[in-house]
Length: 307
DNA sequence: AACCGACTCAACCGCCTGCCT
DNA sequence: TAGGCAGGCGGTTGAGTCGGT
Image (cartoon, rainbow, N blue to C red; front, side):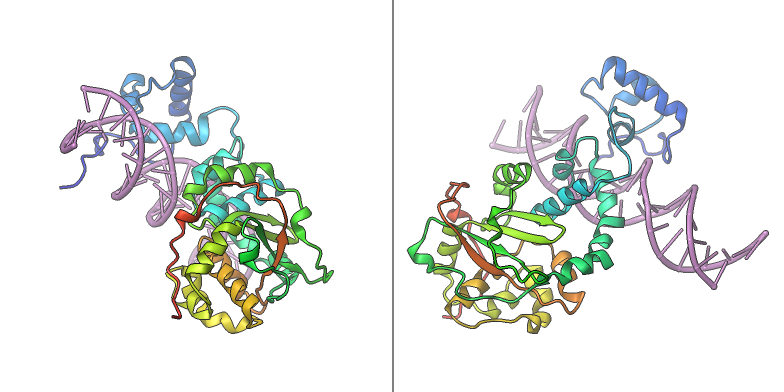
């Protein structure tokens, strides 16, 4: 037996709200509030609507200080960063954007932003990403267990190798990532920042070292056998990767395996947009273990064990 | 002018969570 | 502790609009 409906489906009106209904709802809530009971609210104000419908109408359209349309570049950036970090948690993303609703952001992402990312503008962005693994940029992990690891996309235009950890982390994103760490599937990936020309990731070195230790010599197989949709879907594309198959390369591959919470569509978008090789360069950030928490217990990677 | 496909976005559906009794 | 309920949420739908032919 299914769940009882919240209202009599036959007795309530559906479809677009009329200006009169809007006026009644808005006026009532502004004077009396919702009374902490949306279900009974329609009866109280005398409109034939489902309580949930009233709630949605108020939250998404009628409540004050809402912004509609016209997303700024900064908002795009925040949405992209958070989507990549936590996925389609629209309400959480909306909480970082005052005046925006989860519904608005969801629609915007699904209809425009996602495409924008892979549009020509996006391609131009991706063309700036060189994706080869560079060895020698990481230290021996066991000798530096308390350091964070940063993976960056190398800027192909400038061929710049300078570490990107001088970039200022958006404090919103950083604190958000810390607060929401329990919700982030992959503890290694602590922050992900998206900028027009750069994508960079902040990696918890403790977690990385620990996981690496438990999954010796991860290789390409660890990706293709991962339950991650990224690993699965991108497996046929792996030849696009330029690998330095040495110890450091293995470490880099481990980090690759840690990208489970990058959304498949983003990752595959990069890959299937063809041509751009994807890669990551590890650099080291010294004495900046600012995340300062023990997350090793969260580690549970479905990695292929070569042993 | 008419048709048609693509796009947008408000609204709905149904599941999940957490609170209350 | 368990069950019921409302709120919250993400996925999906479909009517309206737009642009191309």
